[in-house]
Image (cartoon, rainbow, N blue to C red; front, side, top):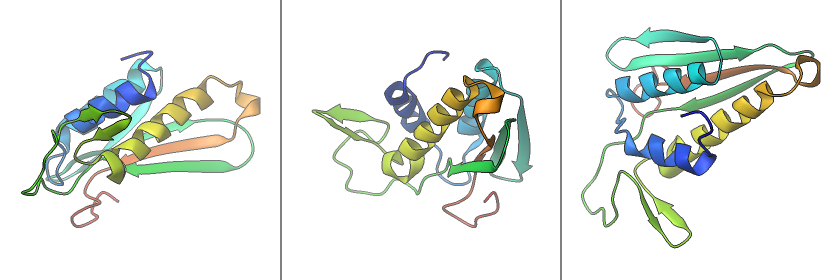
Length: 140
């Protein structure tokens, strides 16, 4: 996982089914991804939905919160592309790629990059990846 670029991370996130109520696998993936990048990770179980992921990056000055959700809506009839990820030309298709796995990949990449800055050159950053945004918002 270490060294995974943003597009590879997006492809991996989309390949993990995470319909709301079924976020355990993606929760574990994100926890492992962050730990492999050297971050301490807190998990908060949301009964029946998997765990929210929280990572903190101490810095100086203001606190910035990067928040994204891991769950997707269900797979509906009519898909003409592979819902677990398909690249066609310069377009990437997949369930949750726009809402919000691409955003989550960008947040993770930004968090990792901020972690490479000296502490006095970055704000305090809290990254949260939450479950059940699409259903009942229990994790959100």
